[in-house]
Length: 142
Image (tube, rainbow, N blue to C red; front, side, top):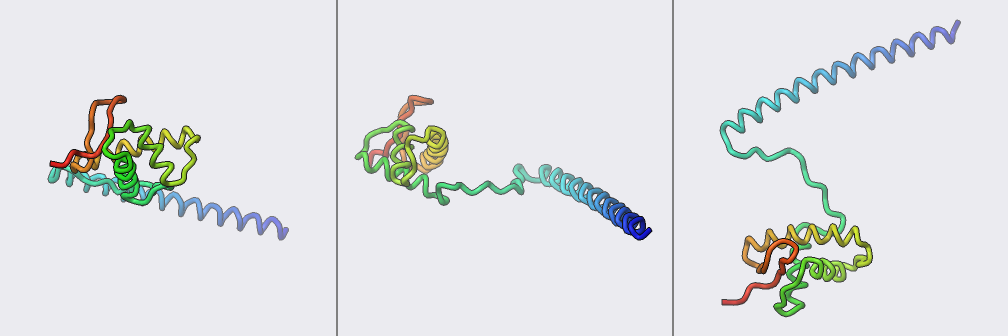
C-alpha cells in the first residue's frame, strides 16, 4: 500500500514537471518570435544586424597571432613570395605543431589564407597570382 502511494506521488511530480517544461517551452517560443520581429524592424532601419553568435576560440592561436606568424615567416624568407602551404608549414614550425599531421596542415592553410587576405587589405602583405597558384610576400618599400 505504501509503495502505491509513493508511485502515485512520483507520477504526480513527473506530471507537474512536464507541465512546467511545456510552459517554459511556450514562453521561449514567444520570446524567440519577439526577437525575430525586432530583428526584422532593425533590418528595415539599418543594413546590417550583427548576429548574437560568438565564434569559437581557436585552440592553436590567440587573436592576431596567426597573422603575426604569417608575416614573421615572410620576413624570414627575405622578400621571397611563398605559396600558402609553405607559409602554413613555417607557421606550424614556429608554433611547434606537428607538420606531418595533414588534417591540421590543411586547417592551418585555410586559416592562414584568411589571415593573409585580411592583412592584404591593409597593405601589410603583397599577393601575386590567383587561386591555387597565388604567392604571398612582403610589399616592396616605396
